[in-house]
Image (cartoon, rainbow, N blue to C red; front, side, top):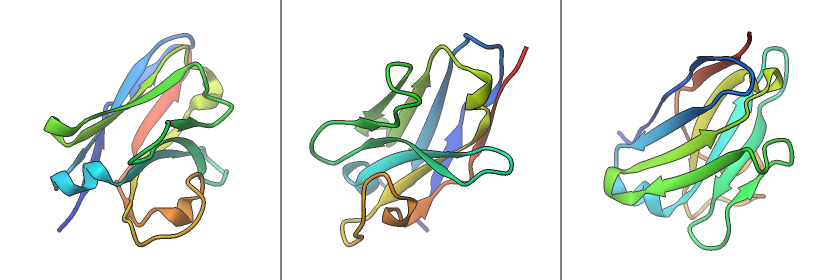
Amino acid sequence: QVQLVESGGGLVQPGGSLRLSCTASERTIMFYLMGWFRQAPGKEREFVAAFPSTGSRIYADSVKARFTMSKDIAKNTVYLQMNNLKPEDTAVYYCAASSPATVGAVTSERKYDLWGQGTQVTVSS
């Protein structure tokens, strides 16, 4: 069964950094559109970043210049480097993949048909 497994979440002080990892069970997924989303308590899940199979990476305005998404195909892993974290970044972070047959906007969760279980990120002093 194809899976995405996130890791790297935790508690960090404001201004700190974390790196989230998302490892896929199959190499093929690394060539799909990959994305990160997050869901804060009481809020809708929202787009954070996307790494298309071709073209430039895309970021939500709220994380631009602070977060960087990267990919290591040899390790079947995508990363989300998060710097200068703020309390409003507190959320469960989800990794997602979009198989080629799906339609929709890159920033829409409906575009993605494979999801990880999520990892908690808490930014607090």
